[in-house]
Length: 179
Image 1: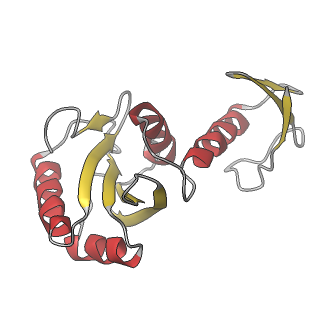
Image 2: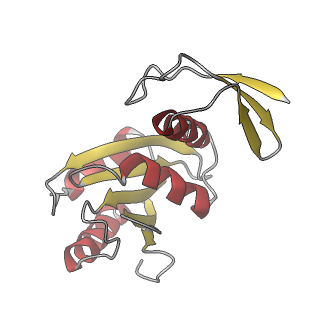
């Protein structure tokens, strides 16, 4: 077993009983003490963050769904983010670009194009949350996805997917044939 040393100083809630160690076995993690819910979430998010660091290949829809849910599902207002990738689908950056209200968010294609160019991205995946918990796309979601896809096509950046995060399973435009 491999031992992991984890620092949760950035967690939303501090650990209750000080730091804890984690032993890693194939597909299992063992902690040295009982772990609070907040610590467990922070630990899971850290594991997912490792899969989305610069240079990591982004090839698992299931892992993406878990990561995006952990990042955005509990936000009280809409957040629109973009995962920018190179031509081999390696992560360049995950950026939260726009912040809205409880029922909407203004997304500006010009700014998305600007960020894609700044990172020299070859592909993009969009993600946003629905604070209502309903992960079904609205007509506005479909419209902005089309506009973003058209704008990015002008600079040869492929749109691979657009995920909507809510309660339960995230909605994938690609899986539902809406791209």
